[in-house]
Length: 287
Image 1 (tube, rainbow, N blue to C red):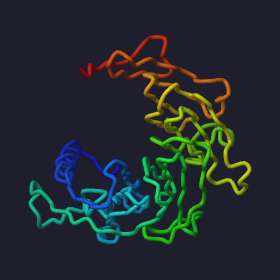
Image 2 (tube, rainbow, N blue to C red):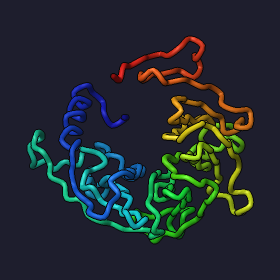
Image 3 (cartoon, rainbow, N blue to C red):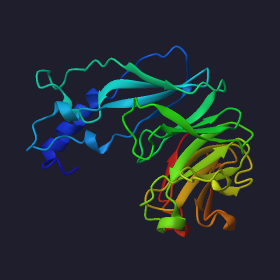
Image 4 (cartoon, rainbow, N blue to C red):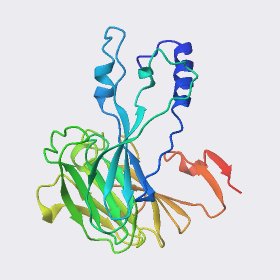
């Protein structure tokens, strides 16, 4: 980052991060399976050397936790987004105790939440997938200019196209409007389910009839376990219980997967999608 200028400062940065690496707290009503960390806002950037007003910029990591009654609880973890906020009076090697605090709770659909994802740029917008295959998107009432984490929220969308649990959600850029350059970051919500289907929604569409922009029936022959968008690209990746990893392009979904990788040998592999014909870049044994 630009605020680190020397190797020594980077080393100290790493040491400080270790102090905040472990925080444990219990939420009695949580599912224990679905959580998400709110991306830090730009206002949480460490103060520059010319600005000594640190307290005004402190922001702690916010954790969204799914509850058994279908609601989501938001907790202030007590962990500063940037470790430059460690009080100078504390020993740098001392373990810091954090006191998580409940900030807010939203939703109470009664159906257990199986996945949560934050919007990459509008950080108070959140999508949740449920065990019955439904998906809810929540945002502050003024979601075009989101406020803080405690702002009043409303449900923007309720999707019902899937019919089995939603194990993974991801936001991707809208290539049709920006050429895949990421300028419309997070316009599309990509959903994967145990039914093996993928649906793509434009969450900012004002028309309910055009909210779903594309679908990929039977994208996998078994449960879709994970979805992940590729930054600054119109592509995203999915993996399923069928042992396959697939790379898709949001502007070419009707043409099928761009690349497909078999992973039934019990190994973890790393590919460069521009060099797939050369084989895996790295392979790791997992047994």
